[in-house]
Length: 253
Image 1 (cartoon, rainbow, N blue to C red):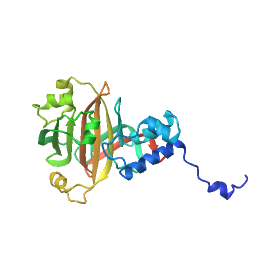
Image 2: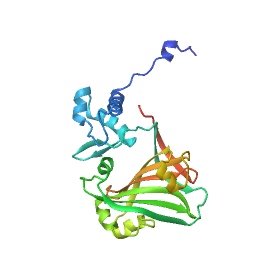
Image 3: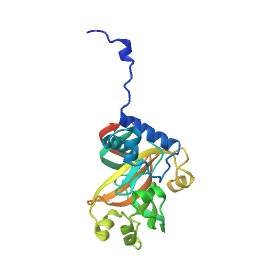
Image 4: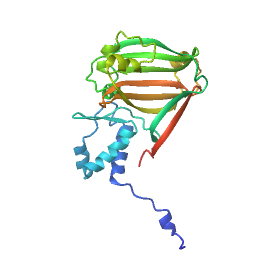
């Protein structure tokens, strides 16, 4: 076999046009030229700036969408919902949460706050809200009286009206089907490791160095309409996340 010449070994592949656009968008976000809640440049604007076709632009935007950084709204545009790109993104066709200490324990749900609010801008975009008030509630979930996770839920406009007088100290997905008449289809989830803030430490009964897992999720019905947005914090020592990977997506490819 002929030896490989050094210049060929060290030669780096030049980024293609979709990579260049993706890197440019990331730079715009990191320098705060584009902020959370801002609309991204339109596909036409990017096409003209980089002299590329629509498919190339959509390939670049798809990487940000898969990373959970942007949301697209038909007829309205594409908006930034987080400015913290993950180190890498994995797509999963199944996510199971398993309590590693007390799978058969007694689970209780305690609602600590329930009110109507105008959600933060990024949540409004996810809920396709027009700035109106939505019902939100915060809960602590415990197994055998030991706190294991806390979550804050923002309901869609339709479900907000239905859940105003419903008891949320229980699993509420069955309530969505029973009282909302919705058929649940799928959930989009992203998660990362984090440390709890002082309020979270108190509610979960942990210290500042305790490992936790933060999940953000959106629940959809069979019509692909979003029903809720949830931000949850799980104790890292109480939950095992069982994942089945479909693909690996490096951040800047």
